Length: 425
Image (cartoon, rainbow, N blue to C red):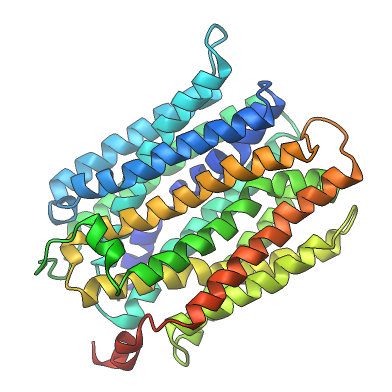
């Protein structure tokens, strides 16, 4: 596989991840601190928005199933989705004074998440049918997720830097213009790659429905573990800003912590990719989950001023993140190939994004109200018991969920056939 082609494919993940972080991390905090929405209202709205967002993914997967085989329609759909995402982000950052802030937040988020879903599903499904080789699939997912983490790192640093010089709202307006430039630039590169790339035969011997995929003994266990792992990962994503600011009292180091975490994720991807020469993908996924649990258990015991301790948490959980980003999509691509279902790749990845978003919706809708009911508020001084609750929901609860997923994964055999024949592709 030519490295240039790999980079041209992977670069589109950068602006997608760049905009994904503020959508799910910074924007809710912005609406809580700048626009006056209560934490409970935001939590319930996010639950509804992400539930709608998750439910529409199977529909998107069905409607776009033929697009990877039709480059002209695929290109037009991508361009339209990019335009809608840009418009949605602009609306999200510019609420009108005479319209309910809650309503504006909800509608703008739905516009953004819908366009984001279309782009993500198509982008991942094209990558899944690009190559058939066992190792090359992991190389493709690693490149994509590495560019994605670069985008996340940039998105993590930029708001912190901008807010040192500008008010929060103005900082995010500058952020929006940077995002627009990035996604237009990346779209040009990616579409040029698309035009000259030949995909492997995408003919399918079967017609797969979402229910058949979820019911299949070959795919259901994978998606069960995937959902539980995503739920465990979604909770800290929602709470990390609150944890750093109020539990650790190190708000000025937020950007540095996030940078350390995502940079460690990129390093971790290289480690996990090298390790697949000696271990199966399932074994590597298990190791990544175990490392994530071990690192987050430590985070529960951290308190005010523990900068070094939390930096180490970011390093080791970031390395674990690298494995959990690169390995499961590669296993899913193996399953698509094994089922001779490359023409249905958008359906498989629609299910994976559906479960990821449903996990995020569940985390938002349950954890934020529960945290508020324990006395925590992001805009007031919190009691010791409220901060203990924050630490429990941020660190301990995700460990319990991910440890359960890990134990279930150890009982499965997800890829024996692929692993035994990996050098025969």
